[in-house]
Image: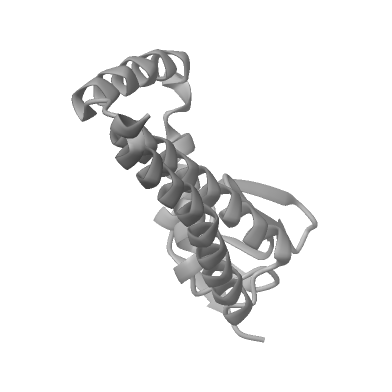
Length: 164
């Protein structure tokens, strides 16, 4: 028992730090969302992604504390990701959409309710942003057509906010 005392203490510290770090990050997300006037459901989506990342970091830290070599962790993760990569080969853009959604949450100059002009050379679109989700942004044209754009593509477009 005494030989594992340092690992037990370090694990206890990490277990205490997880809810504290979750609380701090959730408050930062909530305050940022309030400042930039994001809807509550969008704030909750970003919180979920951050929570998943914190849990992964927590598990990685606990594994290292208990002596699992980082090389072994990376070997196991690479095997898991290889299987997932083969399974989701056609869906590789999921991570880029999630990342784009988080970038749009914290730094986009537009928000839900804004009237925008997508400057696309093939089909320029004037619409109102209805919802920004984790993977997609929903916009509605003046004709009532709902257009769903993956967040990664939405960030690649030139977007002009139309002031009323």
